[in-house]
Image 1: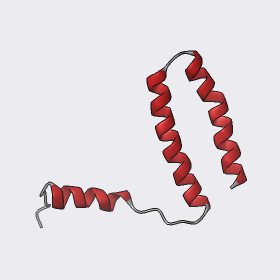
Image 2 (image 1 turned 180 degrees about the vertical axis):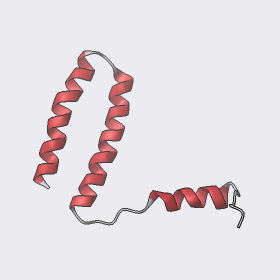
Image 3 (image 1 turned 135 degrees about the horizontal axis):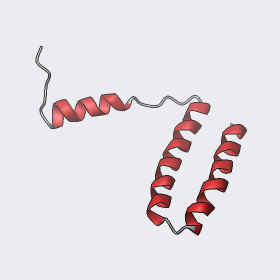
Amino acid sequence: MILLFIIYAFIAWIKIPELIRKKEWRELSAFSVFYIIGFVLGLLYVLDIPVPNPMKGLQYIISEVWGLKYPQ
């Protein structure tokens, strides 16, 4: 788990000051969102916490909400 923190801290130490110096605010916000998602998923994996399958959520949206079904 310590290695996960070290790797993510190193990546942030390299990328974030560069984005701030170039004043790329949109890229910084997109990077931050994906960075946080990746960190949380990595942390859940390291802690052996099961992560739900995103395909089940997409299948529910497609079949139940939008009403699209595959012909059988």
